[in-house]
Amino acid sequence: MDIHIIKNSYHVPEKLIYGSHALEKELHESPYEGISEVSMFLYDLRRNHKEEILTKYRKIAVGDIFDCEYQSNKIYFHSYEKDGDHLVIFLHRYDYYTDTVETIYHYVEDFSLFPHQVKIQFFVLNDSHLLIQKAHLRSNLSESYHDYLDFEQTLYHIKEKREVRVIDENFANNGIAYIEAISPTEIMIKTGFSLIEDKRYEKLEPFEMSVESIGIANTARIVSDLYLTQNNLIITMIEQAFQTKTFANYYVKAPYLVYSTVNFESYEETVVFYNYETREVVCSYINHDITDATMLAKTHVIAGSPYIQLDSEDGVDLYELLEPQNSIHIPQEEKLIGSFDDYILIETSKKALLGGKEQKRVRIQKIPEDVLHTEKGTYIGALADKDNLYLFVQ
Image (cartoon, rainbow, N blue to C red):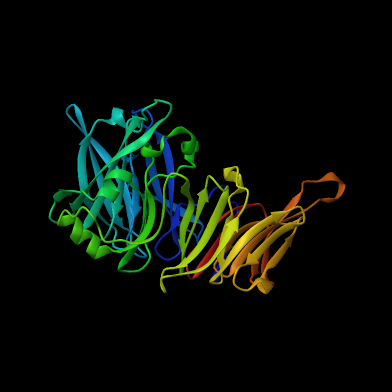
């Protein structure tokens, strides 16, 4: 992995895209309350130069777009036009490599519903299929809580421009929280809403709670079953949670699906490192006496190995679950700020002479102890792919 330092930074771009470029966005006020217009920039990180792109489109942030294709670097965005008394919203796919834009979906909506009454999400499953979810605001029976708790989904064929209503009970009743590709043919799917957010476990009755699940599915099979209007999609369930248990965190970091669940009765968090290639739980960790979300475990996958971050007055220990002898201690006077593949980033501070400004440095350290580089400046953030690590400092 090559390391690149981007100096004089004030923020980190949204994501890496083709080659040494990154996508950067700026939000601006729009004529519609609660909705922002968007400017998009292509940031050449090697030349430290950015250029606005797609300027002919009036871009708007009106719905979440999840690119669920494996290792895709396409850019998706919304634009809108006024048509009489209505506003037409367009969803576009931009291929920056060929510099071409394709309109893959359009719909007419009442902007006054966004984002206060309706939330919309788009899951791009592959080149031809779009899974669309609308979540509607409603109150629980006691009217002590209201949120986006009702869901409806449709599958849209981009090429043929036809739509099918989704009737799968899990999707319809519990909602889709997240989808991410883990291989060219498979996706991870998280359904159901977490009970930790807004302390829903205290506000909802048991029958008002969703059944949460994390599973793995074949993308082509999911699409086929949705077209056949199946009400029980074939998903390999890894774990479910309901009423007294909820998912706290989840993410994909090859070859692991890392997730944790919290049990409200035992006040325990169970962290699981699931190898989705071998289809087995590699290891787990129990975090006791969880009474607040700030006490949830911090996890890392470094050099392909599972770690738990343990904070104490003496500093930070990165505890290697499979081979504890490879654990790493970071003293209290230093600060762990991130991990990327084989590397950890550590921030150090040094008091200047004669009361001058404190000097900060960022140390890039390859596991276990090799210091590769130390850079003066304040850490802003980092982006990484399998070949490059871009460190942003001010």
